[in-house]
Length: 254
Image (cartoon, rainbow, N blue to C red):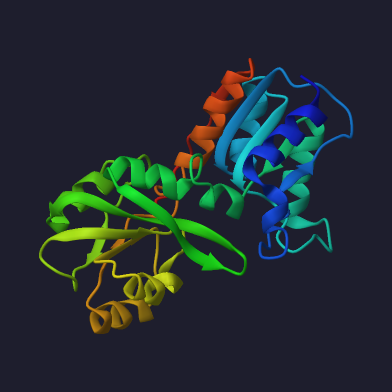
């Protein structure tokens, strides 16, 4: 497959252009030639020297990640930025990135993957950011104790430190909002939507007080652990397109 075809297919499926005005990440092809072919694709959560080298060692032509190396543009190609770009260029490895588009996609996204794992039904878009959403809201089907949800989250890839639970909601949880990564800023929206709980990756100091005052349980399951689902879904998509794939697991514990 031509690299341009691969990029166009990914952009189209993820609706990349819809997030252009709200995402600091330079989504799409961040590093790579205008022409080239793709036979094997590597997938990872983060674009870092370790994942770049692992992708190259696996014989990949392009590395697809959730977190890229360009956030609001690159003014100086020095330090870690230089090292990462050099690692890509020296290995003739392209880098494709999907940040917020991959958080919010209703089928392929990180929030969708978390919701699948939790068995949430009757889902609707959640996590408003300008004209788009980056999360999902759904029902558990039957009231669940917080411990049941926590145990499920503890089973996620990369959940090395366990899920932190701020247990200020009801004893049984039925309505759950999900914004992966760093999603504590959507706590008020979760409360307004009648959620019993918010599942996210990591939180700020203020989330404790906000959750307590809102009467909402917050699950902090880990930034990395809540964001492996999207790239895994894209890996399956690439395989449907007839491409060989490899997955680079590199948990951060954060």
